[in-house]
Image 1 (cartoon, rainbow, N blue to C red):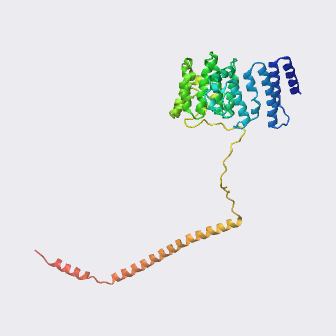
Image 2: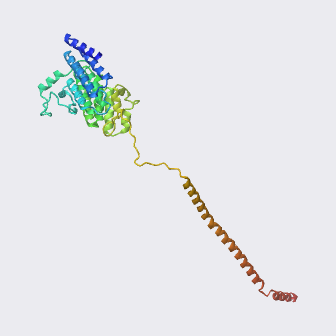
Image 3: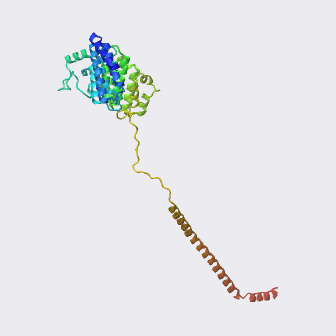
Length: 377
């Protein structure tokens, strides 16, 4: 009921020329579609929300707010998206919103766009350089309203959340283009430059990060003395040299770049921590998917307790083994007893034979007695 009231109020505002108020009412109606408790198919819910946000975009265009008109229409396509893959329709809508702020011919990272073709490029010859008239027309379509880059910054956070680093770098190029052309921004532009470096490293392309750093970023005098410049240089030089220790030092929350890291968005800080010296940055696993446990290929059955029969058989076998061990021991002892008796008998017979033998000891004694009687003086 409240949604119908919001839509009716928005229609009345459109009729009376209150385009900003009408856009706000349409966006509230779209938010109510998202928060409804009715059992509606997700695809249908997204289409209904996209319809209300499209009406809000039309109202923003009439209110001369092209930046807001471009971004609100893409919001509904990311509702309740819990996977790491972004739907193609959502990706197309988000990239079209980026070009609505900055035409591709003015974007230094237009080649990283993944869907669709720019309105300022000939579809039959995409690689052709834009003419002078095309550049002038593109500058007229460049969004120059204050804080218009914040809408594109939200798109960058959405791309990073879904791991679409190419599209995030494409959107970051649009933010840098808007800030470069306003002639006022310095700190925000420095943050946009370091985001370009981080996103290029996240894709595993440190060469592009270094080239853009030297060709574009350091050409701005204010960027050379900024803390973001030091952070960007430390990051891509550590990746180019494949020095993991230098990379950890560059992104340490307590190191020399702690102030540069603190000024970044939370999504960028998380992305810096996922950088690697080789390859692209690690992507986060979605929280909705439970961690799968690796099951063993072979089941290990627990040892079952033996039955009563098996126990009795085991006892019998143990008794038999003990008996076999004892038997040879008894036999050996009997053999030893027999050997000792034989030895005693043999010794007795030998001694008896010796007693019967006459060795002539008496004659020698008589001879000795005779010798004693002779006087040798």
